[in-house]
Image (cartoon, rainbow, N blue to C red):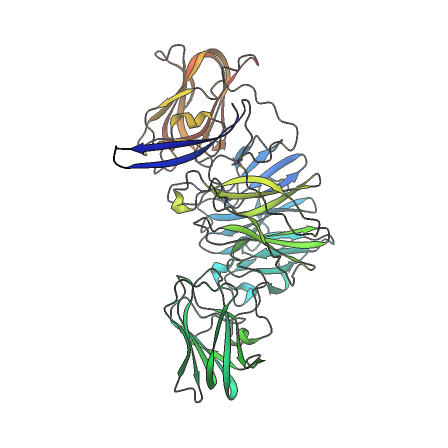
Length: 610
């Protein structure tokens, strides 16, 4: 019966014993609409609705090492049944790097795609007359709109990623982007150039030139005075910094005011506060550890009694990253960060006259990854952070783990958040395997965003369901030539669940999956969703009345067919057994794997036994 069940398992050897529990959800018979909504690893999803059709653009992942892949687009008429095709831009292997985080906007009847080039960390823009292309570079000189520091001055190449275009109600276009540093700028009407200054939404800061440690930052208070309190706000809130603070009257002989050099547990959070009794004209902070990150200060506030004495005083440092990152930025009026724990994945949303900047924070590789937001009355802020600014995070039972990098669909007055989460089980892809999901997004009466409850059931159809026919294979018995583990058994290819798949034990070929339909049926078509949809597989499908004698149904072994998802093979046949044999994958390091293998009958009455 449908419902949630909790199983208790007890094991023992007569002397010792152990207990474990597992929760299982049993869904009703019939079509299952749930998360993930796409088969395969497609993080950083951007959703768009245009002319009656839904589109999702995302990063693609193509092997167990976490390699990024080809540009593609997913399309659906009902938000449940999705079909993928490769797009022509950027051309894989000819771009000087693969692509991350495509983001699409429509302006003036044309479509503009903003993408990040992996490795190069720069933003490129393509233009097309249709959402699925063909695309071409918008900038005729074949250059990115932002590259390296670009017009942003202090940013390093790694900061240039996850660009999102946004068009305000007055038609003005903006671009939001960044990693660790959150940036925004106006765009020219043709979207080809940044128009004016780049705005740093997290506040100004001092940054050293690179990640080498130790790095020091020093301040001249102008004269010797008592120092009673020092408040420092390092760049990353989620990192524990090891540092020491020293005072000097002559900039030569130094006395320790505070020493946290061995700190590895207390994270920066809202900043470190060190109190004491010291005397000096010069103050020096030396950072010697920051858990794999680099040194940097949004603010250093020095107090003599209750009086702030550090504002706009001369400062120097061991090194400086460049213009806009000078040591003096740590003692100006901006004490940041205005966006709490911003990491990446900017997404600007406007609702009822308020601007909401959603973004990802935490660590991508683990369950701390989440979606936060801040609010403003202007596209560039200043932003205010609500008391509870986490929109989406891992749930208690870890069925949703590490959700992040979202977009938002506003459809018929309702908002839906489309995001990625770690795959099930949470393994592979250098711990960055992520799948696309969707859930309801709602606002409170005061304008804040309600925390989203991540679900396994998703949001279902948003337009009338497109009839698919009866899948004769769903829930039937399946066997395979090999299985990687109990997490990748053959039956998982028949469960209509994009969170599970059959995968062979290794990358040796051929590998075969055989389905017992439980009776003889007239077959009309077969759909196959391979593990890596953007890759091509060489395969053959056969049918049999008894599981012994086999007849050819489809043969794609002579060469690699075009990569689409699902692969559709249409032919009328009568069979009790169906077998697919996979002979090769376009990337030979990958094992054979199938998310969904569906066998559709000719007659509606031939639904098979669920």
